[in-house]
Each structure stands twice: as structure tokens, then as C-alpha cells.
Amino acid sequence: MKLLVTGGAGYIGSVCAARLVAAGHEVVVVDDLSTGHADAVPDGCRLVRADLADVADPLLAEGFDGVLHFAAKSLVGESMLDPAKYWHGNVITSLRLLDAMHRNGTPRLVFSSSAAVYGEPSRVPIPESAPTLPTNTYGATKLAIDHAMTSYATAHGLAAVSLRYFNVAGAFGRFGERHTTETHLIPLVLRVALGRRSHVEVFGTDWPTEDGTCIRDYIHVTDLADAHLLAIDHAEPGQHRIFNLGNGTGFSVHQVIDACRRITGHPIPTRLSPRRPGDPATLVAASDRARTHLTWKPDHPHLDPIVHDAWTFMQANTS
Ligand code: UDP
View (tube, protein in one colour):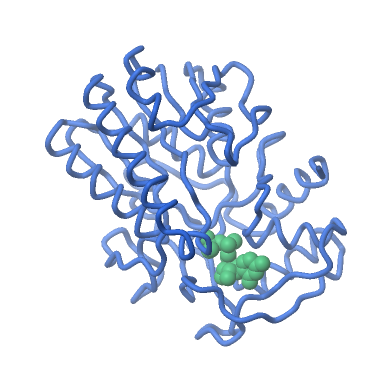
């Protein structure tokens, strides 16, 4: 298939683009490089360096079989301080993309949604049928796009899939996480092990969890990417299907730091800090639907191999 990958110079987008190319697809990446890196675009992909909102229409006029839409603003804390950046950058840009797809007859869309749409869950693991009550602006913008996709699928026959990511980590060869502004737990902890930071801040130790720190469901980026390849194949015209992607096991912030100590051999000092605004206490996926309908099965259900791959990547990419 000829596929447009938005945000394909970023962490998850580049891993997915690499796996799409390996599977024999023709891939065009569009990325404004505001957070991505040109050298992260896999060999064999054409890179269009531009704002998606500006180029979606002329680009899709070339004729594409589908779009995998990763490009987004994705910092929870920032989304609480600068909501306009998220409503414009995520929602308005995605509406431009949906309109361009409709105008040009692009049949399939796979969208990077997020567990953040659920907010503080009433039960865990969280199924796709759980109430969507995001506790932060980032999650609210992802949910708004999910709703728009449902409308476009119903009205215009779009074959739409939203994949709700839980906590993505790990790396795939030379493709990994290298954000200029890093806010994610695992890469921040590993920066301490590399000697680039003195300690890790633990955001809240008074959460209603066993050890008082937040619990998350960590998924390897290659398992996540593989779900996208399945999703583009399983997308059905006129339907918007939603799938959670996680391993179904929760790890606390303290447990993640311990795993990083085991893998790196570094003591990794911690400092206890106040809660981070917008964080839910526990997010763990029920991903039975993806396993059943997409025939998806993660190859990395345990935390240590995920941390191991992130650590290998980080040691090779210390800039
Ligand atoms: N966290 C932390 N210290 C950090 C970064 C993150 O304690 O320096 C916590 C954060 O509050 C959350 C968990 O680690 O409970 C995972 O955060 P991350 O930003 O990696 O992912 P999120 O769950 O927000 O998507």
C-alpha cells in the first residue's frame, strides 16, 4: 500500500515507518521536525518537511491507500499550561487531515489515541467501553479527534481505527526516544544511569496505590508498531474501531526505577516531589479486543526487556 505517516520523524512514528517499509509498503513521511529528527526517518521513506495542516490536501491528492497519524503535541504537563497549543496542534490539524482525506478519497486512517482519554478509571484493567473523562487537556484533544473520526466514518465511509496507547517505551535498532524536552519516566531514569542527571523526581508518593506511586502499563514500541500494521489491514469502510494497546500489567514508578537499577547497575537516586497535575493514579489496559479482532499479541510482556532495549538505545545515542 502507499501510506502517509504523519509524525514519522518522531519516536513511535519512525519505528512504525521502519516496520511498514520492511513489510513492503511505500511510505511517505510528513513531519515539521518541531520535535522529530530528519535522521530518524527510515531509509526508503520520502520525507516531506512541512506542517501537516498546510500540506495534507496537496499531498493526499497524489493518491494514498491510507494514513497513519502520529503527529501530535504530546506533553501532558504542557497541555495543562498551554491548552491552545494542544487544541490547535492536535484537533484543528487533525480536522484538516480528515477533510483532506475526504476530499481526496483516502480510504483508511489509523490514529494514535491515548489511554489519557479515560482519565481516572473506575475499574482496572480498562476496557474500551470505559467512560472517557480525561483529566488533562492532552487526553481531551485525543478524545475530540476520536469523536471526529466516528463522525467521518459514519458519514463518509472512512475506514478508521483509533489505537489507545498506554505507556510506550523501548526502542527498535536505531529508532528510539530522543526528545529534546523529555518528560517520560523511563528515559528520564536512564539519563540518571548515564550520568546526565543527578536524580529522578518521583511525582507523588501519596497516590491510592500499594507503594503510593502511580501505576502504568508499559508496552514495547515494536509491539505497538506491529498493532498499526494489523490495524491498517483490518480497517473496515464506514467503521471506527477503537483498541487499547497495553500489556495488561501495571508497574509503579518505584518498580520502574528498580527495573532500571537492575538493568543498568546504577543506584539511581530519587527525590520525592509533589504530584504532577493531570496524572491519574492507575492506568492499566484491557487489550483483549486488539488480541481478538486484530490478532495482536505483544512479544514483550515483561518490563525488564523493554527497559533493556531503551537502555541499549540510549547508550548508543547519548547526544
Ligand atoms: N513520573 C515521575 N517522574 C518523572 C516522570 C514521570 O514520577 O520524572 C511519573 C508520572 O507522574 C507518571 C509515570 O511516571 O505517574 C509515567 O509518566 P510518563 O510521563 O512516563 O507517562 P504518562 O503516564 O504521563 O503518559
